[in-house]
Length: 210
Figure 1 (cartoon, rainbow, N blue to C red):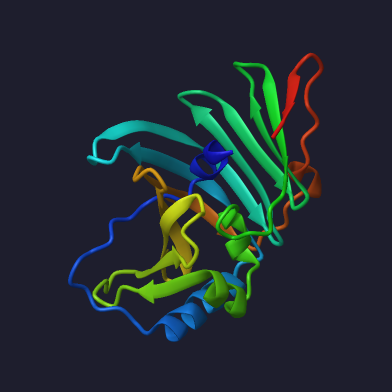
Figure 2 (figure 1 turned 90 degrees about the vertical axis):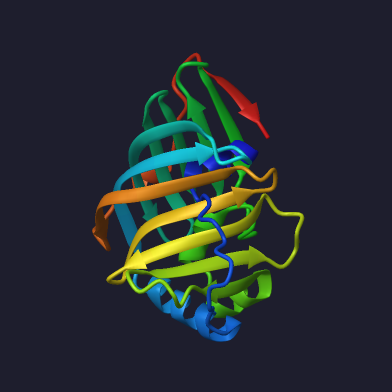
């Protein structure tokens, strides 16, 4: 279900050549501290995808909610409505135009479900990723995670924080396509309704199981 990762939005930031990075363990600990400060996150997003040549393919906007462990609500409003929901056991991808809901079991593999980064501990990060930090970026804290096993759905993932707040993330997928997601109107650690992380397919909608 490759589309899930793309829609959920973790998408590329180019790997800069010639920059200096913090040591792997130190970067992982720094990233873990930033993620540990987030029990929940909500706001709006603008997501832009690019092909291997860097040509923009499409852009979308919507709103999101994340809550650990592994719960997320990702609603695309424009240009085509779509909803991605997980309750940490099941993932639903609802396409109202096609009148279909694709259902799959939740994966505990961070390479398959990057949302789990919100609840992974340092040892999980170290086990599954090489973590580096761009020390030349003085305006933000940017961390790049590269899977140690190459069979996953993405080549590398970048998370960008400003003043301790997650402001964007980006992914380069296994086909070399890039997606960048910028977050706005972000609120951290606000109470979120549990029912937002469960999806009941509307009557008449075709349910597909992946």
